[in-house]
Amino acid sequence: MAFILLNLKAYEQGVGKNAENLSSIAREVSESSGERIIIASQATDIQVVSKLIETFAQHVDSAPLGAQTGSILPESAKAAGARGSLLNHAEQQISDDDIKTGVARLKSLEMESMVCASSPELAAKYAEYGPTYIAIEPPELIGSGVSVSTANPDIVTDSIEKVKAVNPSVKVVCGAGISSGEDVRKAIELGSEGALAASAFVKADDPKAVLEDLVGGLK
Ligand code: G3P
Image 1 (cartoon, protein in one colour):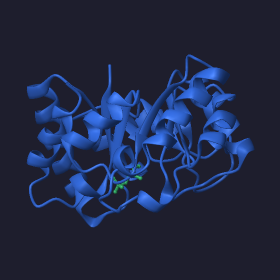
Image 2 (image 1 turned 30 degrees about the horizontal axis):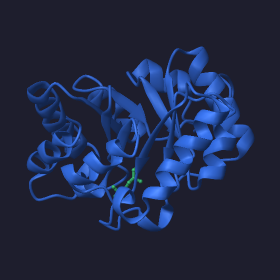
Image 3 (image 1 turned 180 degrees about the vertical axis):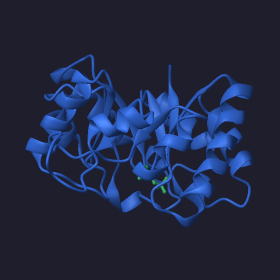
């Protein structure tokens, strides 16, 4: 089932009490539309957000359980209620080893992993690690309001082709600049199995109306 993942990032409108408010809106729209909506929140908000809607961490570290301080462990994200995590977002890039370890660690916890890639070549490389999802996001379009599915459809179709050639069970989704239901519809038409959005929803004057429009593109 195709879905929308809403990354709250660290926008003021998406942190703390505001994360809870946006998650309540996402829950309402998910219930009224019957569509799968996932929120990726700050680690500190997972516990609250996950009571309202399916939640992913924005990032997890590969540090082990034990005597180390300050890391976000997959085990902690799971205990707080996260069902999965983004890894290697363009705004939180990690080494190939950490991506590989993170995917394996999330899998061992029966959590979903969504590895972000900036090119079809990197998407194919990360597909070898066997994540649940590869998210193709051209960094130059992130936050631009210009949708990847319109501005660079080839990057989506190339990524799908390359990822499926490596591992057909890895699902490919796309994001960057997605602002409307039409952007989502185009992404799905290109073969994307979901869409990621952040600024269009989080920074909207009327986030509910924006989200209703976005999920309309999944139909
Ligand atoms: O994780 C999704 C994000 O990077 C897309 O951001 O603001 O272009 O929707 P935005």
